[in-house]
View 1 (cartoon, protein in one colour):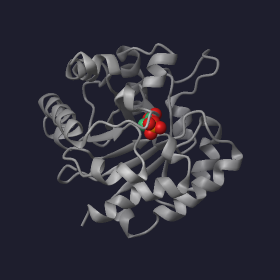
View 2 (cartoon, helix red, strand yellow; view 1 turned 135 degrees about the vertical axis):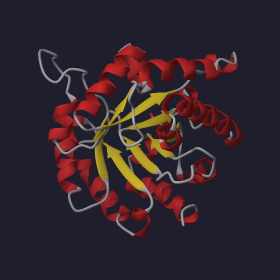
View 3 (spheres, rainbow, N blue to C red; view 1 turned 45 degrees about the vertical axis):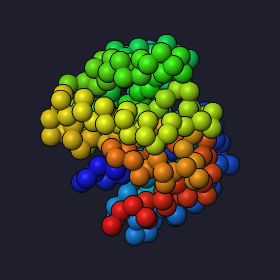
View 4 (cartoon, rainbow, N blue to C red; view 1 turned 30 degrees about the horizontal axis):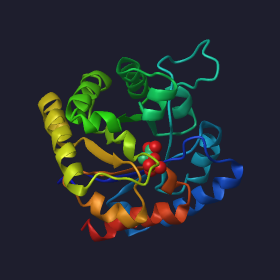
Length: 256
Ligand code: PEP
């Protein structure tokens, strides 16, 4: 954790979920609403098809709803894409950008991610910018160089702590059940923090840095306890309200 930083537990449903899954979001919304919500934020990012109905379900809840990607333009001839304005129009508050699956499947570059982040900010959304190294890069000790490059080119100048969240997601840990050790996470998050402070000063000190990659109820406490880990970005374990809420609840032992 980071002093004076409110943790964020965020779920990424990826290309999973139909109307039948909305009961899970309803259960999450009900489960989040309690004393812990005074100290810890929670966000769920379903596929775009469920965004509007999900925000409607969460109107009376502290559970926030976001999207998984946006186009960098406001509108236009971009079949299949959605803009940041459209997400805001559905009452979405956040958008995940630069997820490794977008970078790989859609060949998104750091520069493309940066334009999307700027579009998200212009629409009043908080951008969750994903960075992370591959297994090969890790094995050849390139992790910090890769993260440095991704941060330099994906995070726009002028990013603020209240509109930007960084998610460190080692690619080899996503969906594999593997996680770095808490010590490894501490080293990487300390590096990210130092870079954010160098570039953004006081804003960088309180910009949230999430850890993502095979977070589950059984490992959440050890990962969320690490210095400079200000929450989680959760894929598979966010599909079930019971797992998502179990991860959220580890903060009962961590916040005042
Ligand atoms: C993700 O894709 O953002 C992710 C962290 O997935 P998982 O938790 O399933 O590893």
